[in-house]
Amino acid sequence: MDGAPIYAALEAGGTKMVFGVGRWDERGSTWHILERVTLPTQTPHETIPAISDFFAKQSYGTLQALGIASFGPLDLSPESAQFGSITTTPKRAWRHYPLKKVLEAHLGVPVAIDTDVAGAALGEARYGAGKGARHLAYMTVGTGIGVGIIINGAIARGLTHPEFGHIYVRTSPGDDFPGVCPYHGDCLEGLASGPAIEKRTGARGEALSSDHPVWDHVAYVLGEAVVTLLLSVGPEKVILGGGVMKQASLFPRIRRHVLASLNGYLVHPLLPERIDELIVPPGLGDLAGLYGALELARMYKNG
Amino acid sequence: MDGAPIYAALEAGGTKMVFGVGRWDERGSTWHILERVTLPTQTPHETIPAISDFFAKQSYGTLQALGIASFGPLDLSPESAQFGSITTTPKRAWRHYPLKKVLEAHLGVPVAIDTDVAGAALGEARYGAGKGARHLAYMTVGTGIGVGIIINGAIARGLTHPEFGHIYVRTSPGDDFPGVCPYHGDCLEGLASGPAIEKRTGARGEALSSDHPVWDHVAYVLGEAVVTLLLSVGPEKVILGGGVMKQASLFPRIRRHVLASLNGYLVHPLLPERIDELIVPPGLGDLAGLYGALELARMYKNG
Image (tube, helix red, strand yellow):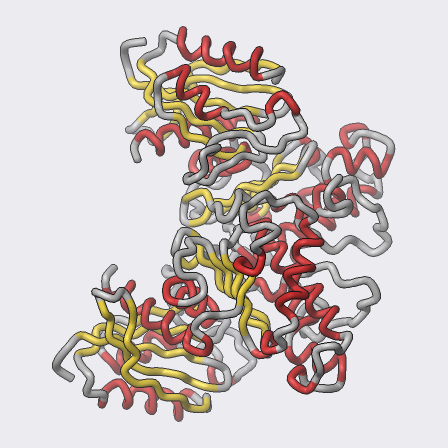
């Protein structure tokens, strides 16, 4: 375990765990990922020892800190006794699991934790498509819809972490789909997530051609969500990722809907001509969460 | 002009200008407002000299800085040549008026500027109903709807200042009012501002009894806006002010709608039992903007 200072990262997802170690390159102001491992997410009893072992046995250098970007919901109130625990997830084995405390005890290094989307937003803001932006939103559209928000370079979190996937939005004329969200029916996630698309069409999104009419409905509600982001926290970059966004025709449709919906109201050099620079795909691909987790670790270590 | 250090504040509104001077009480961590003047807003040619004269002739002490909380839209991009100017207001005489630059030149002291609602949000967050909250939203519902957002104690502003009054929200069943917003029709402001209420009913809000059915529609859409705030930036206090909110029955209606709309989704000690502490009226009444402007001045002066 002796040697050069290195950082540990864990992107804890509902279906897989991605973890690894990285070296901070001060001169290049970037990360070098030294090793990365992916495991299916089973129970904590099976999964956590495998992760701990990896970090304990790695021989790249001396671990400084671990950053976790985790599925949730998470308790992230610093004053809470459950700080760093998963809370009310439908995944029973992980319910109320004290992820941060357990890994702190196993590894003996400081452990920083935030949501998976906050981690991805941070990674993209500092090393990806949002490099240089002080205000950014990262929205992942997949099994669920999650949003991470960066304001003045830092992760924004108030009463709870953002649950922006559950806002209500306008729907397109003729879209009377009742939605699939067990809490809200036709909230954003209920209308535009992967399961919503499957329920709307009987087929998974990746099996649908780009001219299937469902994409109009999906682009409309995702566009409405982007408009609400622009009118509230005003991101300089809106990064759209996740499985559903692999349907690349969504990007031009969403951009068109955003301009139509704003109707010239926001005055900014990026609008309308440069909206392609405002609403963009991720720059780090599947590595955004891991970069973000490394960055969480480094920020935490350096106060 | 010699003597104790004092600060100047200007709350620049579309119908009136409220300005004055205050002394910062370091021990009590509060402001003492020494004098306050209100003038109708006319053209800059008439109004600005009156304001400058007041500050030039005051004899309370030595002016350290001026803070402005102004109607807008404003250009608040620090890198812009028009930084601190009013931009595309319908008030022709004030269009593109360089408010900050002119007052800086007249007074010879540093001038800080932000939006009227950002100023009110800052005032309420530090000295009013939001004292102690690190994350807060202040929404004023009057001739228009504006929102100021405080995150981690500081005014949040991204691409532009928040234009949250123009988000689209769900409307209550049976509410088919087309709205009055010249840009968007039935956006939040188009549905729930003072002019919207007057157009909906043929009467001004203050003339309508608390059991008029319009309040159900208004509480519904304002409640939806509060839900969107809670799910995005997560304020610990949502302060609702402005003329429309003088209809006090809106508060319990909005709180009920927020809980119904969230449907148990957000887990936080304030929900549901203590929602009365989460959604509240202003604590500083009409002085929120002036306190905020004084605070802007002090923050700017002290870097």
